[in-house]
Length: 261
Image (tube, rainbow, N blue to C red; front, side, top):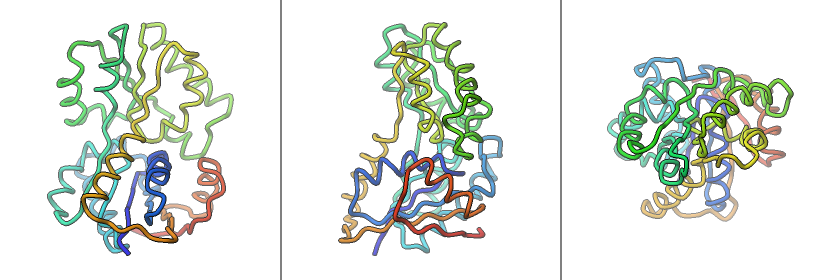
């Protein structure tokens, strides 16, 4: 049975998986967390392309014909390359929600939170130049958020202080729209919303990506299954991955496996 694949450098893409699972509950999903090489944010474009190619080959072997690159950094570095390399696969990528943020702002100031790899990538610069020329776009690279989400450290005092250290200066600068440009960050959205206290809207692109995935699935004529399966792979530690999965998503009737790629 043809499946939908999703991959990320780690567990961040589970925020996208969550939205895709809600939107397409009758389709088999395969998730790959490349935790052995997480984070991707400081890796070179060439290395990210090589890692993304290996993962795509693995997902194709699992019979995935639609693949969501559920990682902003990998999307920025490798999405176009993957489409050229695997023409028989339909890819959906991530990009920061710059366009809706720029359209919705009343103050004329938006913030984009992302990894360094995303913020320095061609895709982000193209999107900002096309849709956000008329606003002030403040870009921030939170240095420890990915690692905190990878540990499922999403509700500690230390995490709250880390998030506050990023968000409060943006609010003080007049930002009223905050675009989450890394798939790890939606797991910190409740903390961000608590700190923002209504002063800014939080934009998570996961639902939009899920809707686009549904359109691609329909165009590709992927048939639904009666008893859809959800399988998770990691290139890292299986036991730790399972613990974090339970913390981020709650109890899931899913198969968790290790892949050495």
